[in-house]
Length: 196
Image 1 (cartoon, rainbow, N blue to C red):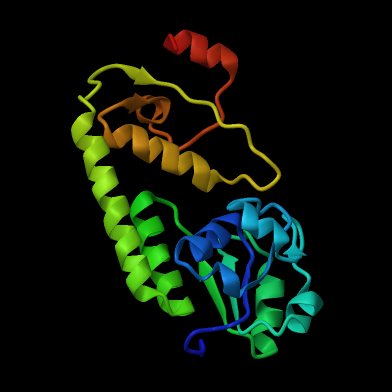
Image 2 (spheres, rainbow, N blue to C red; image 1 turned 45 degrees about the vertical axis):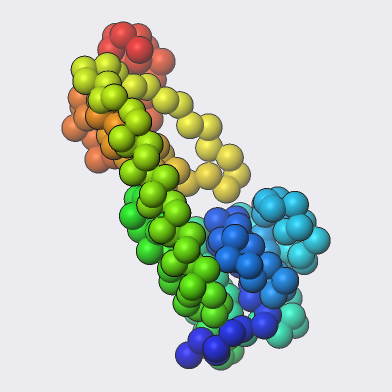
């Protein structure tokens, strides 16, 4: 059970750290990952996790009353289970597309006691998405190629979001041409054959 208005929030993904700050609850953030650098104030929060590990003992020592974790194996499921077994509420989030990102913002808002701020933010982001879609003339048969460099904390989710954004403005992606399931590694030689 998530307490009303948790005071010691731990974020185990850069995205949830940014969301907590965007909702006005950054002053209640007690722990973050060592990759969280935005907003700049996040750097002052103690690091309790890296891309490869979660320091359960440190999280317990901070008196965490809510942990925001990444799903789809972004955070170690064993660490999540351990935190839960110690009675610490853990909200696991995973957004494979833009609409789920908006839903996750609402979930975080409800969990941290900032539902109104979350609603305001998702409404503004939805309006921005509509404005972008309306402002962009469909690119028709133009082919959109993009390259993502996987950082130490990168994930396939990043690529799925880029593919979705391209499709929202009517672009054709390599994935569409090859019937790939959203993203795929593509050798340079194959890009040249496709004319990108």
